[in-house]
Image 1 (tube, one colour):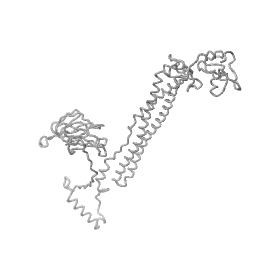
Image 2 (cartoon, one colour; image 1 turned 135 degrees about the vertical axis):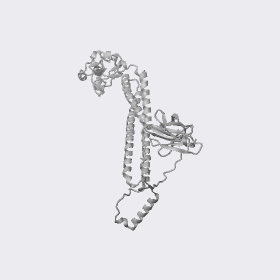
Image 3 (spheres, helix red, strand yellow; image 1 turned 30 degrees about the vertical axis):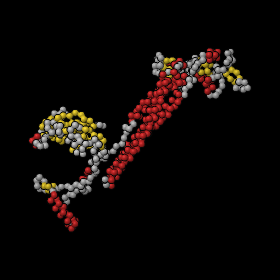
Image 4 (cartoon, rainbow, N blue to C red; image 1 turned 135 degrees about the horizontal axis):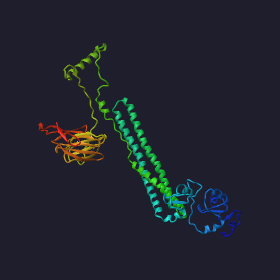
Length: 472
């Protein structure tokens, strides 16, 4: 190493000069120029050209005579990372108030009032042995594991949604077979709505998948950089840790948010229950009107039809209250939809269904009197769950969006049941006599009470929200 005024020499057998103190900035670009100044704040040697560019910043520069002293200080590491906000500056400051690294310009502009600031070279000492370094590696591994798990779950959601889409399409197709060809438009609208809903959910899943994939790749790179650090430059590691810490904070929250959506989206389809009963009740596409007779009514076929209709109307119709004109009786055709078993393995006896009620969510609640159970069925009439009661249930009625009232005939009580995710017994109250049928109207519960063997005991008890009643 040169110790006097000359700081350069030529390599033996070569023509390119070799300098004890080359320009740090030019050296990165493959150039070999002698340094004439050293910046104490940026920790770099600079040639005359770089000094002219660097003079825009108020930094303390040392001349060549102080180079040996700088070299003898044996700096373990020095800042090299460039500030993103000020590309001409090196990240060389640590603000303890905000726990961030920054450059000198950032310090002047954003952290001038911060009391806890240090030079990066001092703040970075011992970072490799710090708990923060170990913690950031552990949290990066945890993030990576969570991202991989949620990514797999989200991909499974895509497959599940596709299967549910196919199931709903089968429901729509099966229902479509029960109606006539004029329902093509309704079917098309239902399928469009189904595809739109599925696309929205799948699009959300795919976006989350893309985000998690990018997050996973970033976390893998972060962990690779952290684990491959060999101790050459603690400043670089310190900057890496602080940068990764900010990313981890945002990424872990994003993974948490996405994980909350896993298996939350689903596609369920419920056929409008008014359509099929209405269609099955129809005998014709229209109705007859009273119109004057015309020539066509005198044809043999028309006359015979008119006589048969008249005889049927006379023999099977009821008369109106004023006995002036017969009231028509309409004949309806019905067809068996299907038979469905509701017996559970735990049932000790054959099912005896005393009442049935459709819940607001479309599921069916039935009262199995002989087994003292309430049983809930899905829209395909498959058994979902059940609730064992102490006495046989008799009648059921809705009393809210997530609650039903059940009459317990033998116990002379009305039991309230929660019909949320799980059937659960709630409050109850006693009636004046055996309670049979129930109906809930305008926030009042009407209970038909009385002994079936004593007609004089029959009454209707009307209960309000405070369970007070009057006897009618």
